Amino acid sequence: MDYSRRFRLAVSVVALLSMNAQPSWAQRGGRDAVLNACDSQRAPLVRLDKEYDDLKRSKMSAAIGEGLKTGAMVLAKGVMSGQIGGRATGGGFGGLGSGFGSMGSIMGAVGGMAMQSAAQQQAGAPAAAPNAGMMFGQDMLTGAMGLNVPGISNVGFSGGDNTKAYAALAVLVAIVATADAYAKLKEQEAGGDLKKASFNIDQDAGRQLAVSREIASSGQALVECRATQLEDINTRLASASTDKDRRAIRRERTDLIGALKKDIDVTGSVVDQHTGMAKTFTQGRAMTDNASEADVLGNQTPAYASAAATTRLSMQAGPAPAGGQQAAPPPAAPPPALVTVRAAVLRSAPVASAAPVRNLPVGTSIQAKASQAEGGWWEVDVAGATGFVRAAEVGPPGSAPVQQAAAGRNARGKATPAAKAPPPPPAVAGPTNIRAYNQSVIAARTDGKDRLSALMTDIQSAQRRESVLYAMLANLGRS
Image (cartoon, rainbow, N blue to C red):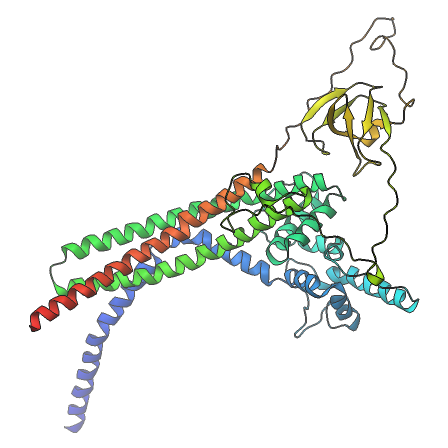
């Protein structure tokens, strides 16, 4: 008898608990439905956020950040002591992990610099001061080839593996380092030619332009999805006939606030990465051009500030000589007179893709504007027109071959027309990619994160109005 009563009591308790738990399960299912309703729109942003997080957490990023912060010698000592590199484990850098190669391959050159520095110190010679350029050797470029970098990994490059490696490393340096370090990397890539470095910086911005536009598009789609959710909730709330239904719908609206907070976080995170890169590209271009942010952006407002700075930027100079005294520079040689030794093209910038200014026949006299060529190009003046010509196409006066009166003669003595040079490829006129990229980053923020924030503000304002209304009605009921 006692057993029977205990059994019936146990069954009653289980039934009662299940009845009380059902609304909680239903509520949880409704909450998940609200949170996950726009998963397909959030997915591209979540993927990018993870890729940037992985990139910043990579050993390559740590090596660059540490190298720029305390100098390459810190890492070199770690390699020499066995604490960093190879198959080391524990709290050090260890291996780079899958897809990155070994840390030893990246640190090898740094270790060599450390040994060279130690030998110099033993001989009494001062050690060279570490700088950003020390970290960007071939080992670092090889490691960059394995990085998964948005806008780089799936883009074809006609300049070979090194071109892709520089592009990947440029994005990583733009995220974790300084604009000056980025400008030094681009100077190294261009072989010291700052005008070519400027062109390459604009190309970097062009590659990231597709990524920023993807962020803007995904953000807009996410906003539209959440706005549709809110409209549906408001419509059902207005037509609800019972307090129970209204309370359930208001819980959905509260859950939507939680979903919007997560949307704002992930959208803001990826936009922040590109805001920083927009600043790095703009300032890096200003440094290589000895210009200001305002010069690079024209009349645009920067994505990273309320106004563009008008102060000219320049590449940082190397370390000063010991004792604080500046060595007097040697007197510069006067710019030489030159002559074209073959048919040449005067271009607007020292790159083969720059716009042509005029054609220069063999024997054209030109005047150099500097004492020597830079990066394989002379800056010259030709009859009042200035531009750049390849160093291989000019020589000192008297070095041009004697030209025949006719363009040429075939075996029978008949004149043959001269072959026409192929048209030059189109050139990028000014920092057009940087400006377009800057605008797209602004659009990604205003059309995504800002509009999501506005939706959340609308819900919170409606909740406050309802609270005030209920408080007024309660006071009227008590009076």
